[in-house]
Amino acid sequence: MMGMIKRKTNKDRAGILFGNSEGSSIIEVVVAALAVALIASPIFVSILASVRMNSRAEVISAAECAITNAVESMNADGIDTSDTAIWTETDEYVYITHSFADVTVIAELDEDTFFFRVKVVYVGDETLFAETIVRNGE
Image 1 (cartoon, rainbow, N blue to C red):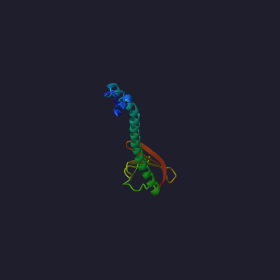
Image 2: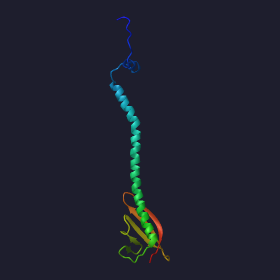
Image 3: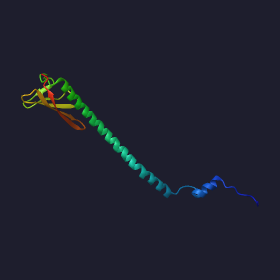
Image 4: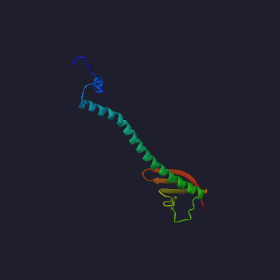
């Protein structure tokens, strides 16, 4: 068999580039897994924080919408305290509990004026409030 030239195959070339091992050692596998974990964990933490912030923003947005609806409705119609089914009057203030969804409205009549100082409170997962002035609707 003299004179025969041995041809190099792709397997031989791969052995030259990557070594002649048959597989990866356990140390190489552990190091690769740690590298992937180090890269992926900050990404997962960022995604989780984003989901939490978005869900809180949705709750706050719903509360702001309920407050805005109540204030806009009162600004359009004024406050008519003659409707005793909706308004209850005490010595200090007039308040409403069920006319608007999810909010409580506390209205104080300014002395010698035709306006109410109004505080609209939303109590739910978040407690928010707004203060405004609304005309007397009587």
